[in-house]
Image (cartoon, rainbow, N blue to C red; front, top):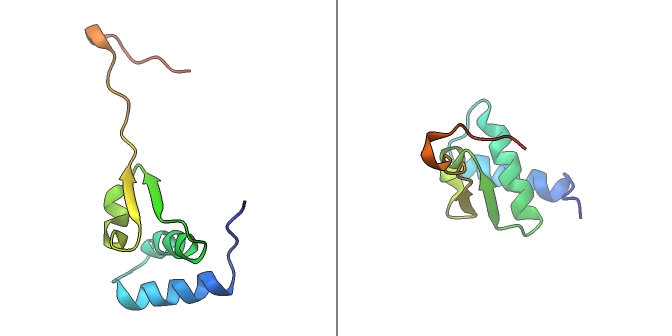
Length: 79
């Protein structure tokens, strides 16, 4: 299922921008959260949890952590 951008997302975005300080590129993060909320998605996996911390009351922000380095100091392998 695709979470489309539409009137419900716009309304949620305007509500968020009125409730949380958002400037510049932060509007993109706000739009992601607005889309989530408009479509009932309540969890966000991200490599940038600090960028979404301001929305934590509305959505669960779950950090994606990098894999642990390999044992014995060997360089990581890439798939």
